[in-house]
Figure 1 (cartoon, helix red, strand yellow):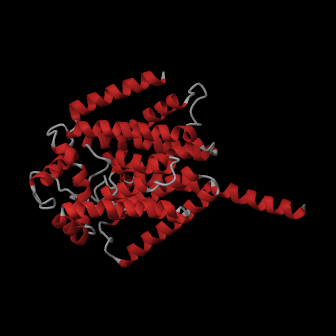
Figure 2: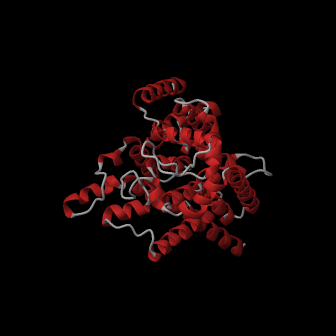
Figure 3: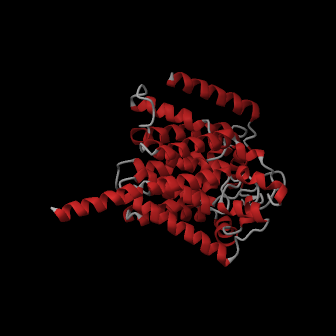
Amino acid sequence: MVWGALALVLLLIAILLWRYSPFIDAVVYERAGADVVQGRPLYEPDPAFLPFVYPPFAAVLFLPLAAVPGWAGWVLAVVSLASLGRVCWLLAPTGASFLPAWISGRGTSAAALFVLLVMLEPSVETLRLGQIGLLLLWLVVEDLQRTAGWSRGALTGVAAALKIVPGFFLLFYAVVGRWRWVFTGATTFLVCTAVAWIALPTDSARFWLQDLFRISRVGAPVDFVGNQSLLGVWTRATGSDPSGSLWWSLAMAGVIAAGLWLCRRLWVAGQELVAFGVAGLIMLLVSPVSWTHHWVFFFPLLVALAAGRPQRWVSVVVVVSWLVLLSRVVWRAPTSAVSGATELWWWPVSNAYVLVGLAAGAAALSLVVPHSQRAVTLRATNSEA
């Protein structure tokens, strides 16, 4: 049944991509690779294309796409599906305990996880647009789950060099005390960036010294419903963008501090995968722009919560989150800022991903409370003895 479902899902994905996929981001990546080959500037606006907003190192890695013009979207679709398959394989031993008992074996469990995750809107949108989110997810999960100690952190550094934001996991590793991973990841990031700077000095100088902190370079307003971050929630509710203000920066710093505190508590409590998932959630919430396809980084937390034999309300959170991500409900809301009494009922729809993310964060917080109670009980028992 599982392998039949997997075959059916892959067939449906192929039909979907063939009939309805514009691969608009894959076209941008393909053009970036061609720009490198032909010596054109990466960040000069061209009305015929969406802007290239990634670091120059990404353009260097996109060079092979320039060799297959017109097929970049399909190449990235195969890479993305393979990446998700590898993620499911890595998560299967610890993350598939919620599956029915008749689904046994690592391969079958991984296939079942793949079917559950590939149907969700972030995965579908990643494939439809020709994005690289699933590739980035594999890089960071591979670093967490593999056993080779000397190079752990390197793949996270590569992911950060490709898209910056995954570098948040290096901060997470610092908080949980994995300093060697941090050093390896940071070194890898610097090496990749240096290689790109040598190959593309003008583009590198422009990106890192001018464009890096300019949110408008993403090409869409932050109040667009596709932006499922805390900044998106605020701008849709108020109609104003506070991202340049001191109070907003302090508020986001507070969210990061609280989230990393929870990550530390979970890691110490032996909930490493949940801690990793919470780090991914915090990254999505505090990033100025978290498009719906970026929410593939929410998958590890969903799997970890489902696998933890949670309380009933936590199971409800997991199921509701899965249904929200499956339903594409956010795209039912208006695509402009939601304000005014007549439109308030759109608020939970237009911010659905953030709301289920916060609920999942609360569920993760509940996992450290029993640990604290057990610690108190153990100390009391030892004292009596």
